[in-house]
Length: 116
Length: 114
Image 1 (cartoon, helix red, strand yellow):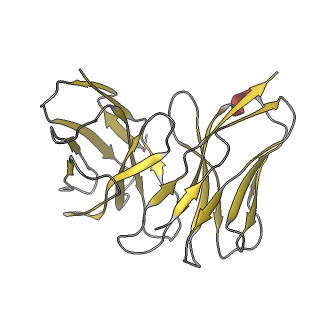
Image 2 (tube, rainbow over the protein chains, first blue to last red; image 1 turned 90 degrees about the vertical axis):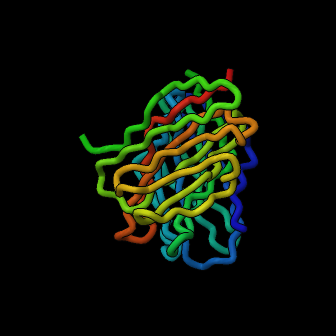
């Protein structure tokens, strides 16, 4: 079965600095999707960024970018110019594709603290 | 506004009771999902449904039941067989028109056993 591992339960960063959150996954599939979700104290799940496995180019959304290493099954999230509002739980997720397998599998999360 | 509505936001259940969490979406999404979140853990899939009148068990379906009689509705019943139901429950949905499309979430429901 596919699994997603986030080995950093907690991370901290100073405001305006850069931080990288790690994620590894295990799959035998060649076609899949990867996501980073942010969950603030409100518990609302907010999509941060997504990556298609067939694309070699790393996805970027403003201050958020990923380092996707398909062979290593690694999918890290880099947050540049960190802001206080970035403090939240961050979840890495893997998505299968196909009928009755179209589900999202989550890691256990990384709690990010941002200090002024 | 389009979105996913979960209700109630907070629910208390006595031991031995069944309770039903509501999830409604007006996004015309095909697939709907229920996840459970416990402290220190990620989201675990309970049930999902890709078409009306069909649904599949996720990783932790025991003690839960669902129905999908309408495209926009996917209620979750937490039965008395669920031994540790206190948790945060999230409903989600997505369109199946495009592969890899994003899954959107509701605001969640807190269930506490008293």
